[in-house]
Length: 176
Length: 146
Image (cartoon, rainbow over all chains, first blue to last red; front, side):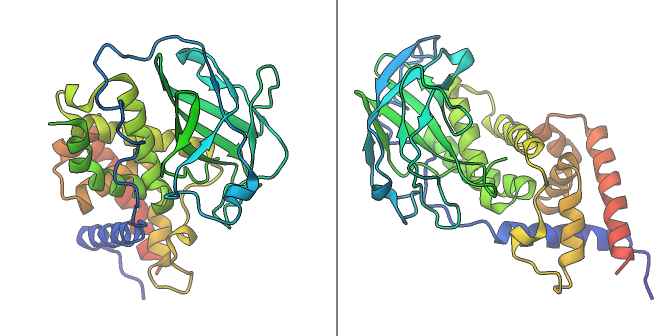
């Protein structure tokens, strides 16, 4: 026989439900969600994002380098290629995916190689979002289309001196 | 206080908050995205009060992400199977609109006052009360059916 639950029972049910959810939060290996603190937190206040067009070099990522490994927390990866970023108001870089492969959420590895060339645009498979840019560095998030289960799977990186570096930045996981 | 210290001070609370909004697997990412975006514009230490700013930003980010997803967080993501007696309640809670989950989490789990919850959500206390009422009504239905 069911009983109309009172407010105390409802409140307890909420507390129990949220305890269950918060108990499932995975332990994070990322203490600070960003990249090495070189420059980022020491920036003088006047280094703000400005409308800049930044052309940087990115290395082609080899699928073999990543194959089968969880990316988050791995050692740094240097990558170069060409990334043409728009200004901060339209901060999506143009990119093309070279067809080597796609991230596999189930394997937790980023298998795709990213090749960026200005003028070759395929935003449906790869995109880079500029988060911050100044004269010497570009912070960006690179996302690659995965499979039907997980549409975008990405990492946070920074370009320094023309080299794209990922250093344990969070794997963004699945997003719609 | 330096930005990193501010982050460390609030991170755990923010991740828990994000977890009930978007699910535990994506919580870290939501918080990271919020902090990244904030730091792109200003220092955390420049904010008069970082805590409500960050909580509001997490809620906005969560709502933005959920609007792009086909489905809200599901009980299966939490690892509770349907034979578990907690399944129906958890399912009902996760089905609540994001704002109602936010309000009930802050008041019923985090034990904040209505005013404190309103500040963190960036809404009026009366609106928090309404969310709580609606959420309680929804969950009562789920409990009643057990």
